[in-house]
Image 1 (tube, rainbow, N blue to C red):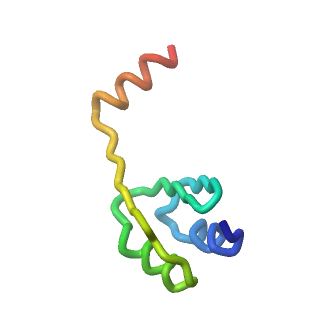
Image 2 (image 1 turned 90 degrees about the vertical axis):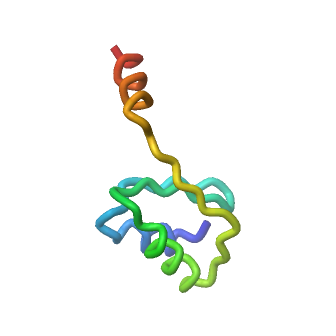
Length: 69
């Protein structure tokens, strides 16, 4: 993945983290920002084949916190 693209995505206030692997990006954000992210990516000449939102439930958070202790 192009470093210019990932650097540009990092400039958004709502982006927490970006993981790049080959042609895949995993972007962690504050809130729902799919529209802004997809516009930025396509405006930079990339094609999005799949976009998926992963929500954590309260149970997911609880399990993660209790496993760490």
